[in-house]
Amino acid sequence: MTEKIKTEQYPWPIVGEFNVERCALLSIDVQVDYCASDGYFADLGLDTSHLSSILGPVAEVLKTARNKGVQVIHTREGFHPDLSDCPQTKVSRAIERGHPMGRNGRYGRLLIQGEPGWDIVEAVYPHSDDWVIDKPGQGAFYATDLDLRLRSRNIDLLVIMGITAGCCVSSTIREANDRGYDCLVLTDCVADVFEELTDATIESFRVNPLGATAERDQFINALS
Image (cartoon, rainbow, N blue to C red):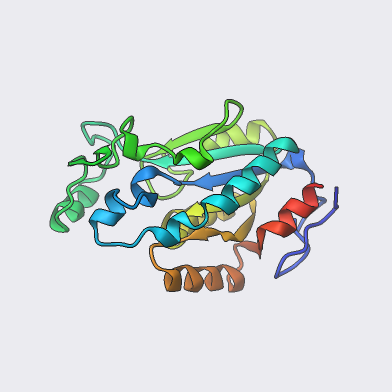
């Protein structure tokens, strides 16, 4: 196993050597309502084919990481059925857009915990040893026990995949950076609702000081 991973910015991690005991792999919000061609995003008039295009790459990284002993973590964004953990501002914005939070859809109530649309896509579904973090916000650290669980395992390196790049992925990276975690974004394993938005967000990841970026092969090769 390599001591450092080659990235577009610097040998990663920036401090110390790379080893699986320090590392967790985050798969962020790869949920049915975001990826399905007839789910919530599709109801908003969005073409979800770009989002679903990362399912194969994400599945490849998940399989390799599990085989090498990396802790895999999945996140799901969603709210209690009574929306008690959803700020009124979010509720009101969704109503204004004509897609109220908790409305009935093809895959159950929108973004409600326990509904089929809220769950993770089958192709990248969690295994029994994976962690699943249910979050009511964009960032994976807000109102969750993720930080506590990582620190209890002495994990300080986070490899990031998922959707949406400019919202939930970006929010999680910023939260992680403020907490001292060293992040590596796999650029061919993140997507947003438009390809051009994905490209712009990945470019921002490349130039900002919040972590490092690389394609998935760099991470997979480091595990071999």
